[in-house]
Length: 187
Length: 187
DNA sequence: GCCGAAGTGGAACGAATGTTATACAACGGT
DNA sequence: ACCGTTGTATAACATTCGTTCCACTTCGGC
Image 1 (cartoon, rainbow over the protein chains, first blue to last red):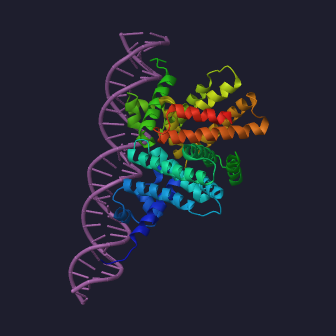
Image 2 (image 1 turned 60 degrees about the vertical axis):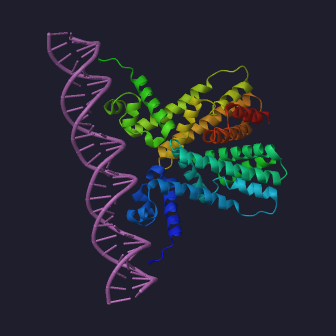
Image 3 (image 1 turned 90 degrees about the vertical axis):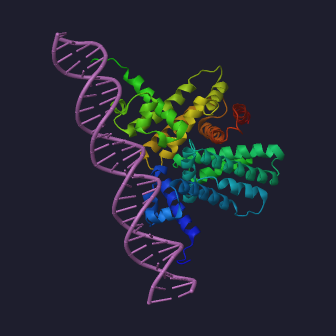
């Protein structure tokens, strides 16, 4: 087995390139040629690491999801701070999180007519809901089913702010997004 | 001027066909041929009413927006009921509103890399925010700038629920969406 | 030193897309 | 009755897409 290249790393480079293109110019701009060029490779190499365009896009989506998941890992002193950090991770307050959000929206739109993608989206959402609900319980805000309902309300509020912020950044600088989050947690 | 055909009506039929396709199978499925076929016409007729595909999509988006705007028109007895009706109009509680939401999400994703579309989206959102803020004032919930902030919070909460309901309808039947809306207005 | 597998680039193909052009049908004005 | 405009359908166009294929390079094993 000659020629040592870290396959997984190369795949990450390619899905990163795809995510960058999608965030910048929409999912329609993520053609095989454009993705390869963005990663500094050729289409021949691209097909060497992903059999299909479909596989490339699915991996791009899942990489974006796991990127968001890893952001949660940052530990905070107490349960309330952890909850706040988790919700803050879902706000487009910097370029990186903004990029993740644009990719998420693009795949939301793509999920229409693609059942596999829709399932992945739904499962990711439910997993996130469980995660937030667990932190709500730890923070002593609510228990059991009530915690899930509270988590849903928190997520809905944060997502709503995120969407407004995505397409009207002038009205929603980072500080205003964080202020809205604090208002939410205070109530 | 021979051959009487209601041009505006025909254009509505075509943008409706486009909206149906987008909601059903994503914006990628809205090709010129598919839209024409969905409307029961040929591409020759389609180009007769819309110079470009771009014009067709822009008109489809604006038609979806004005459709949502007209839904607000239903009068309610008091200011609080009007506010509730407006916010309920932003929830995908039936097939029609669900369709509008899918189209909105599709164009949200498309707005990346299309400044004109992004501007239209932002302006529509601001107009909706003003509308809700006015109803918040009339309902005596808040005044002036506070009314705008309250409106933003309401819209964020409703949009967040809408997105969760779009991609996880099992968890979000219509009654649960409306219950979440009532919870929101009670607080 | 040579062989073969892994990696890479680039060309080529068929299919599909947006767009344009052309031919025909339908109807009002004179 | 004829003409010109409007509406519609079909075909063809160039372009672009995903995909496939082939030549070339690079390295480890024998």
